[in-house]
Amino acid sequence: MGDVFHKDCPAREVLGHLAGRWTILVLTALLAQPRRYHELRSVVAGISDKSLAATLRSLQQDGLVHRRVGTGQPPSVTYSVTELGRGAAVALDPLLLWIRANAAEITERREG
Image (cartoon, rainbow, N blue to C red; front, side, top):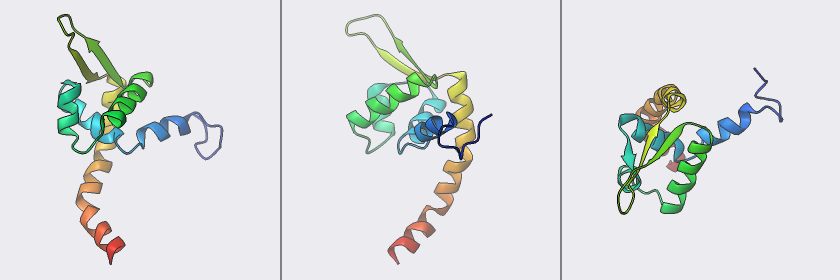
């Protein structure tokens, strides 16, 4: 295991991907169930098409999300978490819970 405080540690790149603004929300939405692109965009309110596409592409490249193209016209595309992605989503869930529990207080402090 590398030292994450060292500038060349490969874990920093992974940390950057997982710490992305939309990553936790997309992984959590996919942890609940596999979803099609437009379903994800509806569940993760406020995400732009560009951000969703970039987030999904990054998560696929990291092996955290699987993209399945079905048969049919037009072909249906479904996204789901991989086992690696499930582990990341489960590990990030306490952070998301903490954020939910403390968001109001933090927002008040910043605005006050």
